[in-house]
Image 1: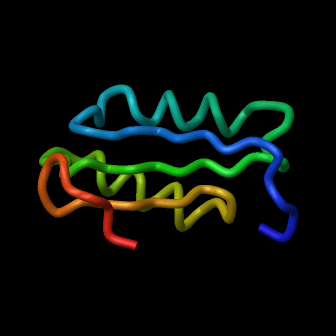
Image 2: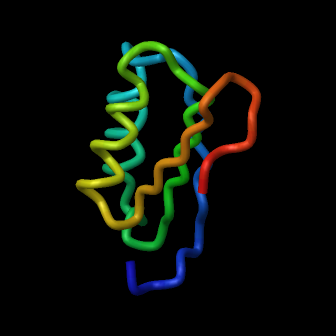
Amino acid sequence: MNITPKISIIVPVYNNENYLPETLYSILKQSMIEEMEVVMIDDGSTDNSRYIVEEYALDYDNFYAYHTKKEHQLPEI
């Protein structure tokens, strides 16, 4: 993303694969999405949430994925 984001959205993620796609899609459809960065922090999910987060990070330049190895640890950067 070449534009400095005006808005940062932090999305905490933990085992919510059933709701995560809808959440991320709704962010993606915002009118100011070009001026936003979306930081998704997966707290050691054991379901498919981590893969959903990675998919969005790969598909969209302003979506960033961070993962912890275990619940309640600092994310890997």
